[in-house]
Length: 233
Image (cartoon, rainbow, N blue to C red; front, side):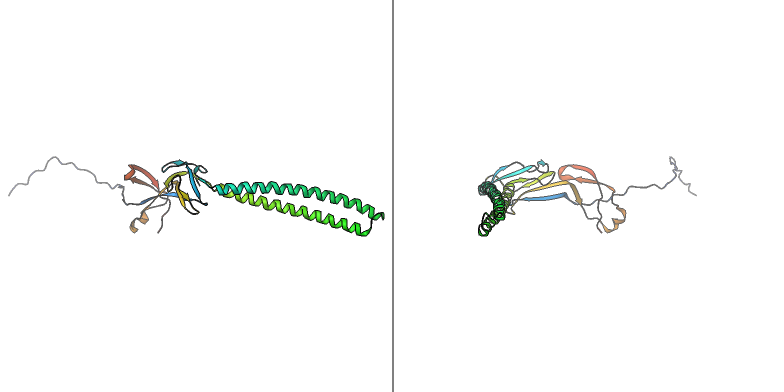
C-alpha cells in the first residue's frame, strides 16, 4: 500500500464574515444649477464688452454696453417736456390763486350790491376755468413724467448686467455688432453644478438622498465627491 505524501507548511485560519464595499460606475451629464441666457431688449450697436468667456461675475456686474442714440434723444426730449409741463403748472397755479382771490373780492361786492349778478357769474366762470386749467396742467405734467420714465427705462436696456453670481459660459457677440430684441448675448451659469446620471433599476434600493458619491471629470482632471440630492424613479 502506497504511503500518502505528508503536506507541510500549512496555516489554519478562522474564516469570519465582513462587509465589503460595493461600487457602481456610471456616466453622467454635468450642468449648472442656474443657467441664464442674457438677451438684448433693444436695437443698437455694441460699443463695449466687459466680460469674456470663463470670467467670474457678480450679480449686477456690467457685461456689455449698447449705443442707441435714438433712445438718448427720447430721454432728452422727455426731460425737456417735463420742464415745460412743470412751468405750465406753475403758471396755472398762479392764475388759479389770482382767480380765487378776485372771486372772493367780487363775492363781497356782490353781497354789498356793488356789482351786478352777471358780473359775479362771469367771475365764477373765470374761477372755474382757472381751476380747470390748473388740473389740466397737473395732468400734463403727469403724462410728461410717465414718458420720461418710459424713456429712461429703455435707456437702462443699453447696459446689460449679470443676473446672478456665476461664470460667463458663452459670449455670442462682438464690439460693433448690431443687437436686436431677444437676441442672445451671453450665457451665464451659476449656483454650482449638478451631475445627472442614469443608474440601473436594481441599484435604486442601494442609493439614498444625502449619500456621498465619488465624481470624476476626466476632461478636467478633477476627482471629487458629491452628494445625492434627488432620485427620480
